[in-house]
Image (cartoon, rainbow, N blue to C red; front, side):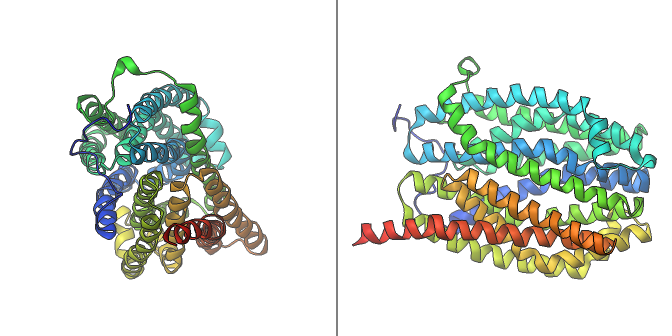
Length: 459
């Protein structure tokens, strides 16, 4: 079917109307949704840090990059694949949109099941890869294995939420994450404080909360009568469409996973400074993720905005959306960075009251916040380039910039002096490299061509 269905209220056409209002209204539920999604692991850390102890907090913190390596693949797949859905929605090719949805959901289930098993089996080797210290190894292994069981649920949820956002519905994923995050908090407190389950308790709480989010997003897609309706009988792998979705999604997934692999090697350096540094830097990284929500939510929003407008051949509107998103991001990041720089010690103590842990966390937050605008630009222009369908190019720019610069900085600086501040500065080094490369790619390979086409059409 091509353009034959009446669109329902839950899908939103981003090819018309006020650009800045649409970007903000579309990004806001994503922002709040990601806020609650980050609460999954952060609440785990808060509970074990306050009710179990510093070693348990170090164990949970040490597994973050491993879990992000596997989970991040599906997040990237959903982000890149969302470009396909947004472009089909913009073109009003609803038959191809439907085929893509059924193909991608089935693929996420099958591949997520396999990855959950592989992740569980290889958990000891993954912890060895980051040189997990002996005093936290047993707790880290227990938590990691339970957490990775839930990767199947994470895979399906991310793909489903990516489909909803691609058709302009960013509110539903927010509500589902709100519900699942509240579930996670209640179960964390019940399992740890009530049943004394320790790190296993926060692991099971997170996995069960992820299952709740999957049930909610699938229920939405099955119950709807909109163009993104999911029908179980139609689940099949359409090979040409799967190839197109994977062409856009796999590079984004690889990009996220390789970034997490890079962070695993950063974790190796961190582990050499002891459990207090591990816990403190883990806290700082969680705070940094909250700080980056405005960047990443606008990155997702601009990807969908570009995808729909490019699919509808509204190039001038797409370019104007880029300019507006940059200014919104600059304002948001400026305010957030200043607040976190000032309030760093007070925020760190929420996770753990140990003086050394607070000192490490506060120092890292105050090192990285002045550079946070580079993180914003990296997210915005990655989303822009991906929205134009150049997912592979984004992957290469990010791997060279974010991963390459970070590892080069650590290799050189740590060979000169083994100092924990070198670990702190490795994060800005990656943001700077990635933002420069992805912007240069956008400017020379997309912007000049698109602007010339706009001028030609206006002539």
